[in-house]
Length: 313
Image (cartoon, rainbow, N blue to C red; front, side, top):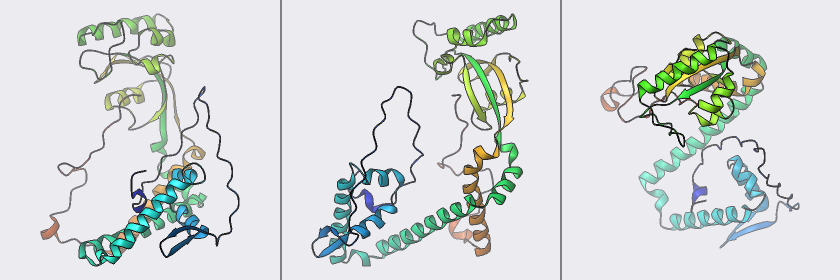
């Protein structure tokens, strides 16, 4: 952790990934012995921090820090906490809290913390409202359509996919010719998985017989997605060109992700909807002369980040 990192509000941590086969799992830290909540655990000059006060502070940290605070990082977090308090004490002695810019930052930080707490509360409430979650699922069911597919990739010069060891850097014409030849071999009855292992330049999926697993709209580049959704189950596509090369796709299943598998994704959506209701009721108005005219939907401000289709897995 960087110095004074605890003074800032960290972003929520991503969910931990499951352990991979063959990777030694780190054993959980032993449970800490019970401590009287009134025990003073940190002393900073004349200030005393009890175990109860420090535990309350820990509850506001992201999950990965809360877990670490019960084990090897507990002392480090305590030291960081003390350092922030020391600097804050000195700042108050100097009157920095009275600086107009700092006062504005403190006020906004308070509002930001409260807004985040409310948003988390709304998510928790939504997760407990099964009827609302199911209604939202039914209304957005198309968003959970998915395709399960395999592919064989034949890259060409300029592709972001690296050339496999010992393979020629094909021109676009050579890559298309090779992809057409593979399509003919598949039509003649050769095994898709076997050819993917031997010929696919997507070595990750190739090693798995071309398996891409299941994916939903927006998870693949546009040309690949369009072809995959249009492809009948069990049929092999003609070569499909993307920035990565030529793909031969075999769709194994079209289905919709069931409610039980996606309901945890729906709580945040309901929370966002509730936040939008609060915003509409607040009747927010911004001075166009000061801020400029409102952005039209679908337009991006120069320099603003934009969403892009993700590359093929």
